[in-house]
Image (cartoon, rainbow, N blue to C red; front, side, top):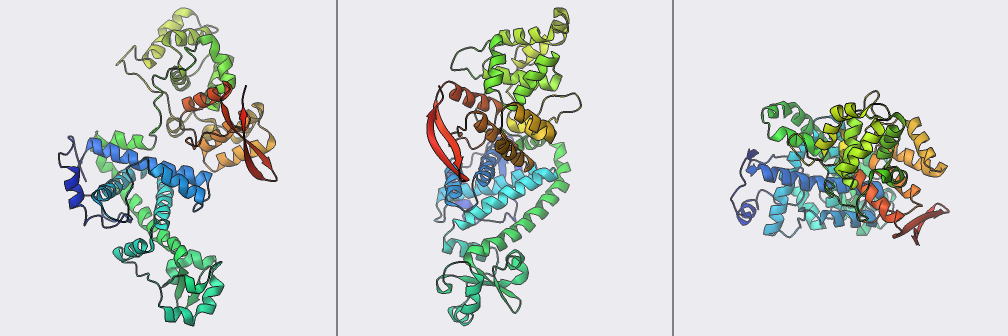
Length: 480
């Protein structure tokens, strides 16, 4: 795949017509890399589109059991917001979507092959995406995919099925043998199903029901993709000579895809310096609340903390003048005004685009806080759910009023590595059990947390969750 500095002038229709043979099916194992030339603009655009889909896979898999109706509905809803809308009935638009699907997969391979943690995340989301697509394919579409990939899995003849119908009946959990399609595959291709005793074995073959065929395909895809990611990681140093691509690829894993909070204006008017302490107790996420408390206690923050907290305050609507007043009032409890002006005021003005190259810097997203610049000794920046010692995190959550059950749920989610989900659960508990809006699966930005908190504090209606007999219910309440 070649990267050009200018957008291609070839029309979309021509691309789609030429790709009809290259992309015969909406599903693929991505065995052959793309060979066409694309612009840098397309490179970034395609990568972001796929990243949106993979983030949706992650969020849906955390909130719902895979394969359930709620999971499917959420996946369909999120994918419809992107350009990944390929269908079985091939149209010109479908071919264009398949082209984006193909190219974007290889772009993210480059971005996510750089570490074991990134490879593991990318592999899991790609497998979930493949599972979702295959399970939503028609019978004709799934059989066509098997043929195109030289997978010799076809339903056994009726005569053979009738001959061993008794044995097949013992291998299925539900349904009648006569209404199900069984595939005859080598038992070594179905070891997961053999282990869970979901198949009938005979003469070295496993008889797999159609619904369980996905387990075999996922094993094939996992092996192919794991090997491909390792090969890509070894080839990645060759890209170091291209200063256009490497920074973009390195930034994709920390890419924020939500609302821009650079110049966010608060609905209630300007937030002044003397309002910040009260707001921190009501509406700051745990990361910013920790930075605020450290500043109030020690009257100083190291550079990483000043950057993370200062840009957050800018994002909630604190003006440059009020920010200068706020920081100066705290720092001057240890140092004099002249020292503050010489050593720290430039940094504050720089964040607001008034010094240096005068860039309007963006508040840090959750992914940037989690994935980059981990805190060292004496640092207070970072994500508490990611970077705090577990006992310190428990202590912090208890001091903020979380009960035993809520604490256990948040800690359990944190241990699984779902830091943003843990933060979202924490939000719901400290806001009286009010669930997040359906459009917000998990928080992606500290300023988003603040915004949602302010909606609830101001008295907007929401849904309150309560538990009885281990069942989750909803009712409407109003915070007044």
